[in-house]
Image (cartoon, rainbow, N blue to C red; front, side, top):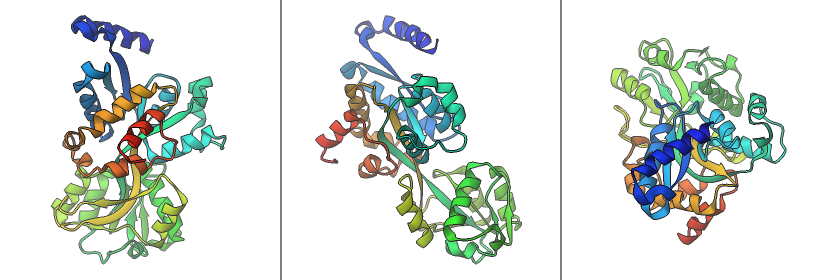
Length: 331
């Protein structure tokens, strides 16, 4: 039914475009419109569509529920490309290789049916989603290990924020009893708690610039703290979906210097069945207008082609993407 709708849309577009009747529609699944994934997908589609008379592709961006929804719909053939958080890309590849699915993926298999075995391929990676540690200006927190004995918000049980925090706590070899308090506040509550002196720090994986971080630094000159050390080195060596990241200096008030950390990345994936030429043209459209792409959103401003080819991509690269990267000498 969805493909029928897109076909009707395509006919409507072609009716007003003369020679454009041969265009092929490709749909990119992103995330809710409030985040970075949706504008990033929109920026990609704008660049692709600027050259549609040359390559015959019309790119449409679609708001979705996020990585898990994108993965299910990509496997079911409802999307042509999808933005996935880099850990979702990794676990999807593990499942394709026969590994036991992680908790919460059973519903995806049930919904996708036989399409659950569609081979996925990496295309490129986009912006970083660094582990971000923000401390009260009154605290003496200067490094990750200083969180011991402090009041720290790790987020509500079951949230992405909480899962990320627990990964770090485990890597440090700590228990929750090593903190003075482990708060479970939702994201919107923690700025008030930090600036009001009810917690000493909070930790969350996010893209930058971010409104919550900006609000805390504006209100009480909260400080970004580096997230690095032996525990982080262990996580980077163990899991290919993590990569080092830097929060650029001057992004927030009271934080003039760059801050080193690590985290996940947004990645673009597709099916092995997507034609090589289609993937090649998508990749070409982005990299040959990389400056224009960076200008589309602040979170994209620091992107470097070398990182976009390698970091966060644990799946095999699609042949169409690989062809372009070889032409540029990047592979």
